Image: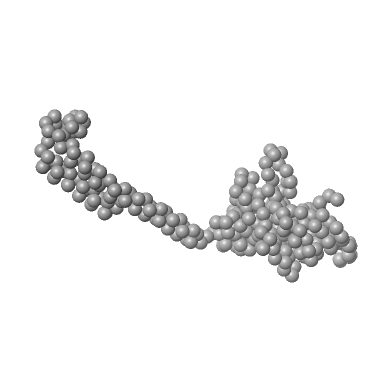
Length: 250
């Protein structure tokens, strides 16, 4: 049996920019533009199966022509909420090129519709205002898609609800954590440097004192005359003191 598609405008109840997550309505208990309706209980009964592979696709594409994955995100099963007249889920967008386009469009309000792909298992007809309505009473939810056009009139996005949520996101906690981690890493490096300097003090001192004849200085283009050992001792002590001062101030 061919899967059927139903299009809805979600009412975005929250947008979490940091975690690329938003809450949407995937179905409303009302007649859509095609003269059809899905019972809320029919979707609720199908959520357990959908939870086993809760994929979110872009425009119902089960496979891209490029061979790349068509999955742009998923819906965490613990986010499923069955209300009196609608079903809500959270969508967590993946980090890939295809998903990025949909995420930006939804985040910035350019795109507002979602759609469900399902297999119609049981249905009935009823008459409403002299019109015959097709009602789905049992179905298997296969996937949720982000789409450009919706059919359900009642589940409209209210711009204020959407934009107020992410206009000034609270990212202070994550920023503070990053700063703390960087500070800790920097302190660790400073401690390693100080330890290295302390261990190398005596070696440096020995090298400078034993070169009292000024061989290193002459090789490096300095004075060819041997230097005074007592003077070298004083220079060595001065160098060591300068190193200690630099290390203590780090």
